[in-house]
Amino acid sequence: MIPANIFDAVHYLNVRKPLLEASTLPNWCYTSDEFYQREVKQLFLRMWNFAGREDEIPEPGDYLVFDICNESVILIRGKDQVIRAFANTCRHRGAQLLHGSGNCRSIVCPYHSWVYGLDGKLERMRGMEDTLEFDPAEYGLILLKIDTWAGFIFISFSEECGELNEFLGDLPEQFASYKFSDVVCVRRKEYIVNCNWKLYLENAMEDYHTPTVHMGSIGGQDTVPIQTTGEWDAIHMESESSVAVLPEDESTLPHIEVLRDLPANGTFFTAIYPSTFFATTQDCMWWLQSLPQGPQKTKVIQGSCFPKTTVARDDFKREVNKYYDRWDKSIPEDNAIVEQQQLGLNSVVSRPGRLSSREPIVHSIANWVLDHTISV
Image (cartoon, rainbow, N blue to C red; front, side, top):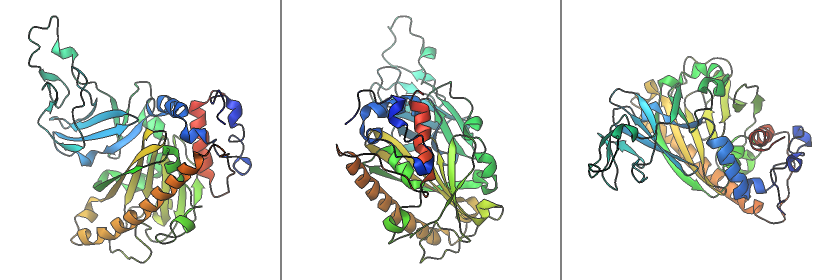
């Protein structure tokens, strides 16, 4: 039974307890449109959201459309080499302008052929000659806040979100030796998963499920949580070799030579809030963006990155298939189990469960969401 006021803090007292005393979030946090809309307003529209890589749009006119929570954003590189983020809506009567990715000399509305420059300025608006007191300078595309870290692009719908470096805290410092500015995205792959976005992030950030769900692929994993500051959490798995290929495969692709400390000795699995997952190994990194499409539907985008020097190797096109095989086998396994979890949470008799010692970041995710959605 969903209570009349799901935002009353009393309903979450058990979630707020220490890990081994705590319960999971109530099922309505994963099924209710009312709770989802609160998350959209308080999290996704107020904070920084990871949107893509600078190297995905390397030339003037290259663009990438980023869709999240029924909002659509154009990331486009201008003639001046500056990457800007615009709301994907015409200033005339609101039609979406671009989809997917590509290259354009200018942005042309598919409805009435209004033309915008790569800098967002309105350049041509045939048919508006007789409109009174119309100033084209006031009807350029709506510019959104944008910033980057090591080639990763972040956007925000709010001017009050603070600076990106404050949001990320010590993440850039802890991950400095990966030299992410020197990697390139070699593949994007999209999935539509019938689950709440939190389920996807929670699943990515715990190893408890791996011996069961990934029995036929990557197998069990053992991780420990890492101390962080900023809007992110991480777990680390110690391993001498990369876990970005299947156990039966061996890759000749090199480790990143400059790695030191924990990055050199295993893999980080990282949640960058609200809904992005990074996996960083000794030879590559990949991300999973959990982009909410509603309370029970998520678009998942997986991006795969390797150092430029690795991509330039003669054997890269052959060896990278081993990595694709790993991701293309394990990710659908995760997709299937979180859809099963969503079905179970939709039961009217579903009740919160308890957490194990192997689920510290599941507990952290729940409390992070409550910190920003529930009044104390």
